[in-house]
Length: 371
Image (cartoon, rainbow, N blue to C red):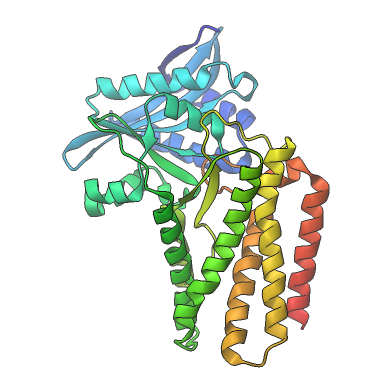
C-alpha cells in the first residue's frame, strides 16, 4: 500500500467524520470528535490541525495535532489517531504517527505527547515503536509541578481513565514507575474515596484505618487473580494505576459516589494483541470480576451474620466495593479513548459466562436490598 499523509483540506471535514462513524464505537466517536473539533480550532490559530492518510485517492485515516507553549517550551500533542477499520494492520497508523511527529517537529516542538489505552494494543504498540515511552504522574509533577494539569486539560485526560500519557523527544526517555508504587497509589486512592464516604455519613472514626485493609483485600484479590491466570498462561503482567481515574473518583466521592477507576493489570509483552475470542485472553479478563463477586458474596454473608456494629460497617464497605467492581467490569463497553472495562471483552469471549455472572450479580444485589 502506498500511503500519503498530508494536511486535511477544509472541504474534507465531513470525510473525516465519516471515517470516525464507520471505524469507531459510539463512545470513541464522541471522544474523537471532541478532539477533532479542538484541533480545528487550533488550526485557525495556527496551533494545530488534522492530518489525513490517503491511499488510492481514498481517505483511510486521520490524526489530530496541537501545539501549546507550556513552561516556555513548544509542546506538541498527537491525538485522535484512527485508521479505517478495514485497513488496520496495513501501516496506516504508523504513517499517521510519523507524519504527526514530523509536522510537530517542523513547528519547533521540543517535546511531543500522546495518550493511549494499553488494552488498545495495536495503537499502543504503534506509539511504543515510534519512540514514545510511558510518562507517569511522578515525572509529570517533577517536570511541571502544578502545571501538569495543563497537560491533562489539553488531552481531556481527566476523563480519560484507562489511558496513559506517552512522551517522545528530549534527551532522556522517562522510565516507568515501579509496580509497587502503582499499587500504593491505587490503595491510597480507593481508601481515600471510602474515607470521604465515612466522614460524609459521620461514621465511626475507627473505620478509617480498617477500611484500608478491606480495600487492600478487595483490590489485591481482583488484580492478583488476573495476574495468576496470566502467569499460568506464560504471560508477564504489570499493574498500573490510573492517575486521572483516581482524581475523578475523588471528585465523585465528594457527592457520595464510588467509581472504581483506580487502575488495571496489563500484559507486559510488546506487540501482544488482545483478542477476547481466544480462550486464554478471555479467561484473563473474566477472572477479576468473578473473584470480586465471590468476595462480595462473602462480605454480604458477614453483614447478615454479625451484630457487631464495626464489623457490620466494614462488611458493608467490602460488599459495596466488590459488587461495584463486578458491575463496572461487566459493562459491555468498548472504547479506546478511555473507559476501559472488561465487560465487552468477556461478552465476546464467552456469552454464557458473561450472562451467568450478570444474573448472579443481579440476584445478589436484589437479595442485599430485600434482606
